[in-house]
Image (cartoon, rainbow, N blue to C red; front, side, top):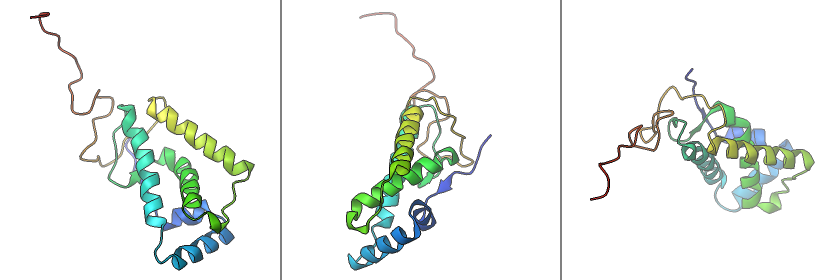
Length: 149
């Protein structure tokens, strides 16, 4: 069943960080002269979409979206991306967050291997292969010639 894929945005950043962390991060990002949030979101979403595409099994949704099954993994990865861009913001990685990050990495590995249930998107990306359709842009079969010349 096709589902709407999700857009990760500033609300996702609020979800990824505790209130105090979000405030500190926002203040430091403004002090730096420009928000680093759009770049962090772009890199994280591209990483998740890359895992989906690498499987060769799942179709991609519209640019900038992730499958609903990978929303939590995306949030965990986004938190790490934010922390690496402004480490002085005090984003903490306690054991619970480390476990979440480890789970996210494991889930992306399952996706790359084609062992995860990913809903097909309602709208396909123009560069997406058909679900379960072999290599990108290829036929679902290999035709061998009559042998060596």
